[in-house]
Image 1: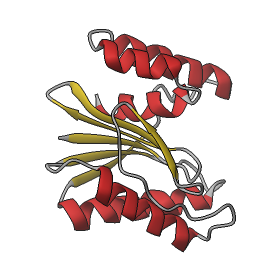
Image 2: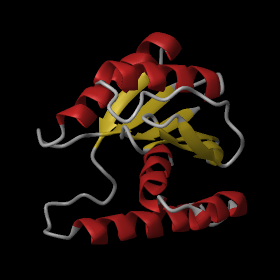
Image 3: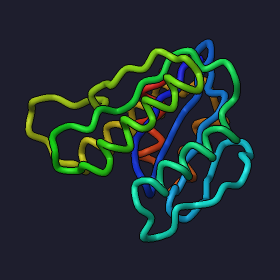
Length: 164
């Protein structure tokens, strides 16, 4: 199984894919301790609004331990480019360590889908990612429906594109 991960304390998204089919798709708020998913996932304790990186990582580990299906072999994490968001960069490496230690998975950091050297706006890149995910998932109606009704389509789309 392959897992695509879009990193965020407020919006951590992951998509588990096996044989081209989405098996699990989750958007978790590590601060509040809430998650929305294509299928039910266990509840978890959040880090709190002012949670330190340690609290956020503890929440992430507890949630992934409870929610992930067994058999993860490979993980693609969206690379956190530059040094502008050190919290996300730190969390991405904690996620890498989690998958290496807990699952023995091969972990790769990949550039965000559609990132180019061309100058485009953030909103345009996010719209393009959602459209690309909708196209890639066209033969999976439950996944397309989940994406369509979710307010954070861009984070879910990024995770799916990393996994497909």
